[in-house]
Image (cartoon, rainbow over all chains, first blue to last red; front, side):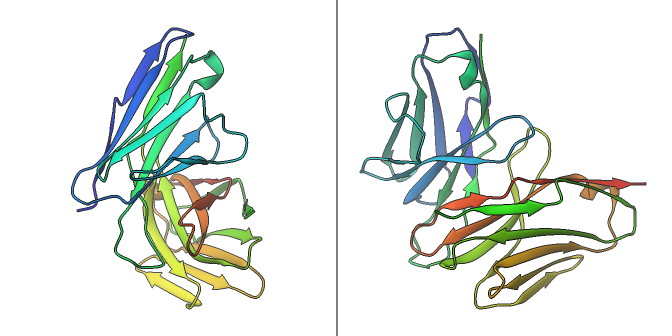
Length: 118
Length: 112
């Protein structure tokens, strides 16, 4: 159980275009999903937290107009990188947590999406 | 906000030896500390976690210790094997926020 998928697994796009990445919880309802960005040989940096049906909360320094996050259902969150530029090339990973009421909630990670902007 | 430091950044050990990775955190409100193993290009995999009401937890060759007073926690891997080679990340989470703040990672290489 607790499987999270991402699509696509990799994408190459031209500078200036927008790219949408999907994150799905396959066998549980995810009340909260998180989006991380990971540059080569670096750690996972939290970009934003999204709760189903409400606006995402962005971390300091992350442009909300550039990284659009939608969490329309309990099993799907999307990240859209708008007007992508080469510096946006990175590994984007989502994670999801269930809503069992526990104070400690494990996050289940998706397989990641490698974005390359030419 | 929470800040997590992790040391060392790289670690090489001989097969069969033990490996220890240490993390410190800044926010005393953090109460959940997971450890993840990540292989190149793959998702992070949870290997062990510890909650603030526990001082030590062990799962076969892997153990984690937590010192709340000093605000540090450590990962111990005994009898290392080549397949333990990967990047390991610690994280800290504050109750109620559910956010993870990750450490900078440790690249572990187990030499056969």
